Figure (cartoon, rainbow, N blue to C red):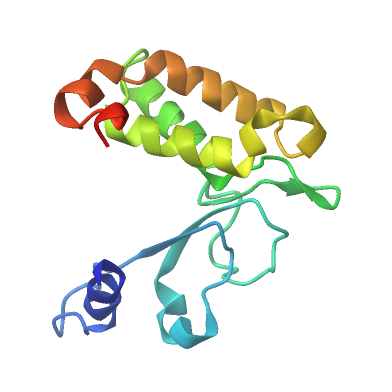
Length: 157
């Protein structure tokens, strides 16, 4: 249902005579799906780890808004969440090194990186040094105490 609400809001036209405030960041894909192609002009950022399709050429690497971790025929990270973590940490570093990451956000990012990297098991051949650094940094910088206060324990589930 939430996806439908977001898409409905994106599809609604902006107020006439005002700058269009809508924008789309593509994550884990670097081309908007064909059913949403009318929204392609709203794509302002791409964060992905698949081969670059070359679409959305107005979003450039030089602008810092096109981050595609794919080189030499393979992904250079197992998870787009590794890239999101890197972006989050870069943003926090510029705003104050050492800030804690929200517990829920840290848990979500860490869980997806571990899932996509098959728990960093070497035999799976998925995890990279970048994924390892993201996992380590999330472990250090996430405010885990916040999770225990706001979320029920997994043991209680």
